[in-house]
Length: 395
Image 1 (cartoon, rainbow, N blue to C red):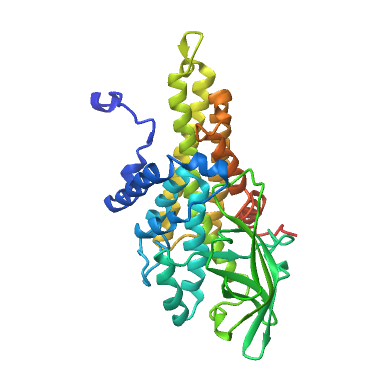
Image 2: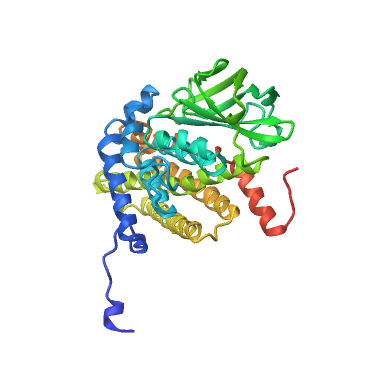
């Protein structure tokens, strides 16, 4: 072994495996631009937004001006970035807060994507440019109070009435519901599950704000109620029937989550690393204690592993070799890792870890929701189990 190879190198505790070297100049520019936006516009106030339970709607226009809304879609005013760039943007947004990343994910992957993928050309021209510009905010109506992991059992129904459709039912845990201008609602029909574009000012449509949340507080979460909502015949998405439609949207959102969770974990790790170097007990920094170093190292390993998985899956998505089960792998393990990192970071900060002066408990609470939404940990486990055994264990 050469002397040069043996010479120790100084490592970067914030990019230990030099993952940045795997990224292109354009990807780094997008990542750094979003990182600066989060530093300037999210981090100074996010503690107050979380405590007050508000999402500042003006952020939508600011993020639209940066090209973040539907950024991974082509045409219709969308930026058309590659998947890795979209994922990196999600990482930085969730470093700020899961609620901020959730807004972008819902807008681009759950509201815009189904119109882009399954809508008519008229629907695309009508809605997508305005949604990309932040002029129209969207939400996604799939989950119901009694239909979460089993969306095929949804009770919301759409029936034909002449040339129109009439929708009845309700949807639960809907991000952006009370600030949305349009909802993409999935309903049972005589021909199977169909998606409908529902302007939220349509008679019979109501959004009820969900209160008393202890997670995702800087995010709008709603119940949607549809009471004889009458829509024209061309409100239906023409190019998809069945669960393929909503599940493909969920897969798009899960891809953003597997990147985003690394951002939340990184925020907790950085806070713990900094705190451990400054906090002194027994006349020494607590970073000098073996047990504290073990915690920091476990966080470091998890975050670097998670980022490598995310970038690898992003490259596979860009070259067309990504399977939906790969996304389940990333969503399951990266969110599980992030939640463990948040809990370890909270223990390093001690009592200070439960205050909003630091980001840790906020991320820890948010990640409890991220652990569940867009497919629970159990559902992703069964998806992977079926993939490797060939046996469906869902029922």
